[in-house]
Each structure stands twice: as C-alpha cells, then as structure tokens.
Image (tube, rainbow, N blue to C red; front, top):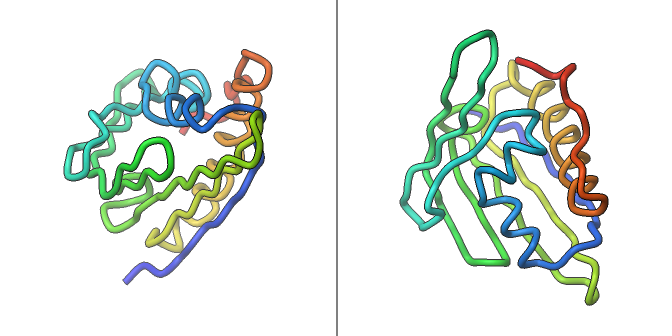
Length: 143
C-alpha cells in the first residue's frame, strides 16, 4: 500500500474561475506543464488523460475524475500511479487573490522525489503564467 503524501499551498493573483480554467483546459495545462497536457470533461467518474510528448513519442497516463466542484475543488487519479490521487482546493482570499492547496496521496516511494519536484515546478509555472501571461521554461524537465 502506498502511503506517501505531498501537500503544497500557494497564493496566486487571480480569480477562482480563472484558476479553475487553468486546471481544466488542456491548451492551458500544456503551457505550464512543460509541454504535457491533461484532457477530460471534468465530471466525476470521467476519464483523465495526461499526455507526455517526451523521447520522440507520446506517453499517456490515465486516471479518473473523483470529485469536481467548479471552481472550488478538483480531484483525480492517474498521476503518480493508479492508486494515487491529486486534489486541488481553491479558496478565494480577496477579489484578486486565491489560495491553491494541492494534496497528492498514495504514490510509491520510488516516485516521491519526482512527484515533489514536479509539483513545485508545475505550480511555480502556473502561478507565473497567471500573474504575468508567460509560463516558465521547463525545457530542463523532460521525463
């Protein structure tokens, strides 16, 4: 049984609706996930696919939407293994600021470093994209 948990919080100068859009629109995710993109219709029970175009081929991770309550909470499986789940909680702090809490649970010890480093890079790029209009260059992070 995998029992590892990663928790991260950040504050972003945006609205809950714009943050939700950035988490659920594949073209948007591709910008801050370093070329990867996530696709789903974001309804509970629906499939989620993470496309990773690395090493000259397209790799896929597949999961399921566990919970979808726009623009407050989104949870799905498939990133970090079939038993792992990531949950995004969005809380409006003021008219122009939200807090994003991420909890990723159930991944293996082997994935622990890549999960934590990955989330730090992805969320930093998301925050930068929402606040400046340009994502970070993650060309160093390919697989």
